[in-house]
Amino acid sequence: MEFRPAEVERLVRFLVAQPKAKADRTMTIGEVLQVAAGVGPDPGVPMLGISAEGQLGALLRGELEGTLDVRSTPDGFIGELRPYQQRGVAWLKMLERLGLGACLADDMGLGKTATVLALLQDERLNDTPDTGKRKGPMAERGPTLVICPTSVAGNWARESERFTPELSVMVHHGATRSREATFEKLAGAADIVITTYALATRDKAVLAKVPWRRIVLDEAQNVKNPEAKQTKAVRSLSSPRKVALTGTPVENHLGELWSIMEILNPALLGSATSFRERFVIPIERFRDEEAAEKLRALTRPFILRRLKTDRTIVPDLPDKMEMNELCTLTKEQVTLYQAVVDDMLRRIEEAEGIARKGLVLTAMLRLKQVCNHPAQFLGDGSALPGRSGKLERAAEILDEVLDSGERALVFTQFAEMGSLLVEYLSARFGRRISYLHGGVPRTQRDLMVTEFQDPEIDVPMMVLSLKAGGTGLNLTAANHVIHFDRWWNPAVENQATDRAFRIGQRKDVLVRKLVCAGTLEDRIDQLIASKRDLADRVVGAGEGWLTELSTDDLADVLRLSAEVSVGT
Image (cartoon, rainbow, N blue to C red; front, side, top):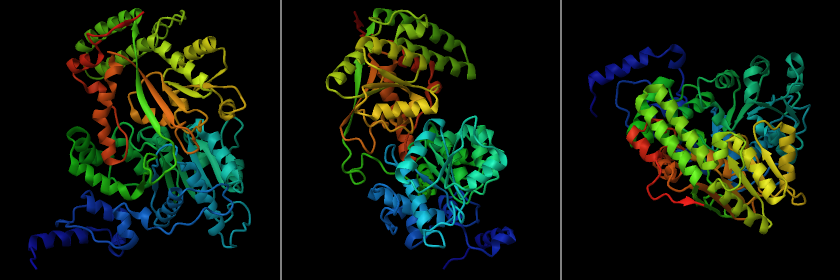
């Protein structure tokens, strides 16, 4: 064997420099992963590899799920877990036993909420000293805190009542919510406490006083910005077990993944600055495959992702068919579109830095409004019929949906366009149309969902704002989804689509994305496709770069194609 004195000396110095508290203990799994990925402290000698057997080896390879002893659906759980959900419960239990935070990143609609509830029910039966007969709610364990968007707080309560009626649930929300000592007492007597990200910030001091057994972050992309107040508030809450649920671990850039993992397993990915230098810049800017593989190796043990399209996961889910519906601009739309392009390109050419980025975003916003309807762009309350090729095409599609006796969801990112859609479609079809947006109170939102899902109630279509209706809702009564305007992020569009394309859907789902021919909307698919590989190579979805385009490239995206035809 060859010994190099200089390397041995560096290794000795590295070992001597370790704090005494660390000198007498073994490495944590996180530290092993850091060394393996080359992001941990430098020991001064080359690291050739790591050899591990059994479940530890499987964990390091990201293959733990397949080695676990899977239990059947726990007693008291109403319903039957699918095999992948049973494996998900076992995976969560194993990571918690190892003291590691877990990110359940299953595709939207695969039942992440039910999986967590099954974990809690299983825990209730098997983790108490009196073989499942409790001496009071959570007497031996402490409650689980679920933090979620306001729009899905009611869904958590309903799902718990449906799947785990033996678990007691407390919803901490609204002006009448309990405070201080009263909250501590009530929370300590509950199995599950449900609150929102907004209240996690506002009531941080109150929440911090409860010894949480576990903290669950639903729609964890809400803590994607590490500098946001709500992210800092969530990060400050203490619990030995942390679980993140998200169908989109990366929406826009890798910094979001760092923020989520920093809450689950602090320091695993290093500081935000070092993470940016080691991973974000090489992967996002230079498409460095070696850096992407290192990041995969580092995060793979903590992220479990299964896809609905994988027939080994969900063999009986109906198909989802997606298509673009090309729409023709009216003469009025062409005139407005061209005027906006000429004005904005002139202003963008003269601007720099943040001002330029703002103008690019404004240009895209205005052009999308023109593509939707001149009345939305002008904001003048003018008449709707005959002025938008896109609105007419949407109405034609919905006419077919109504004739077939089926139901549809219509998504728009603009609240004002949602109002125009409801006004126009209600008048055209003479039918009741629900409109779910951010201003709808939770109780009314829950009623809307219940009525839409009820086949006996005549609500054949629902208009939803993309942000308010894009997550956490089960709307499987619909098997048609229309994206009235395009979003610049495929992850957000997919989340919205999966309100209908999820477990419980019995029909094939037809997804139509309305696109005005020859406009920026006509080019968006190629642009999105060019960025989609970033997240696919690491965990699963990505975008966020349009403002970086050169003015010439931007002009190519925005300008009308020469062959644009005009509708009558």
